[in-house]
Length: 218
Image (cartoon, rainbow, N blue to C red; front, side, top):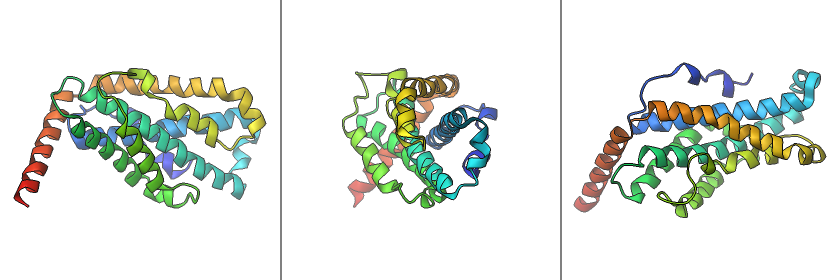
């Protein structure tokens, strides 16, 4: 499997998520795990015995490289807003800190996969980041959808970007989108078990205070 997958060890991790860097890493690695699991799972199911030989086709491999980055960006978007909303749900922090924490998760994910993104000509990290910033600009951190309902981008992204013939996708949409929603259940369970929201919020508040102090000095 591609290096994008091989370096992941997410299932063996169990330490608390009690810092901003830990939050960023959780979001980056779990988004990558779900992206590869659902994309390659869909391709293998659709192609059957032809699946291994398709990786000898340069055009197909190029299409995979594009698809995996777009699906990853969508997974990153969904998990970042979920994780930050959950981590700060009981914290007295302003929404600006929440947005910065979510943006930090997204930027970490793009940085972690910069090499893969560079090899996907039809994927623009800057455009993906702008789309996420637009989502954050209108995101309700306190009301509206929550929990599993926040995972809106990744199911549709898999159907859109998977290199499968459109006439087949029309029959697959409901099943494929539901498979992505189901895949997130274990990630949310892990996060609930490991998150120390108070510690993450305290660090975010301290970082925000330092930023404001530095700005006042200037």
